[in-house]
Image (cartoon, rainbow, N blue to C red; front, side, top):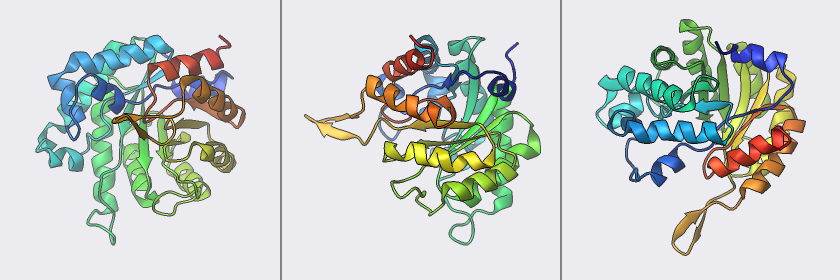
Length: 291
């Protein structure tokens, strides 16, 4: 039986390695732009399972589920809201089947795509209920822990965290996306996020995605005051068009060298977001394990 992720982080000094991008790998396997990636959990399960297996083989200690957009609002955009439980359970099950029993499966939950009142139409109560529902489905499928990732609005991720905490005490990670100003798109500072999310019961604080990899270390420093384990999962730089193809500028070796600094700055978990793949994860694993 896998040790609870919180206990693992408390009992071991070794930095854990998360996975890389899911969307990038799905597209490499033929998913068309604008498609519902979560639907592949039932229509192309072998591809989804293979992504988890590939990252585990590359050295990931943690593998995220293909469920980033599997909340009621994003699924409703594709007419799939009534399949929320099915798709989330399948995402967690496929990640487990692909990654094996020694790897932590982390249930991924992204933002709703809307705003809370008064900027939007969502209430905090319905956001909490929705993320509680998604969390339960991911855990039923076999997830070991949950992550709220790529959020920009503090009110939304707080409501989501409280909704998760209302239904489970499973390990909960939370991650916002910051720009070069060290603020999210909605103006949230890491200090504000750390204080609010720690109070909401989040176990591990992090950042992911983003347009400037240089912000990782200062944000980790700002998070440190909250007294929670930290993680970093940024993009491989800003994408560029080269001879008609979208490329990402930061190589696996460069990414791992930067991640060594994140670990020194306090990150207990390092991984990658957009533009990172198995080669980046192999480089991370070699860095943290001294290979």
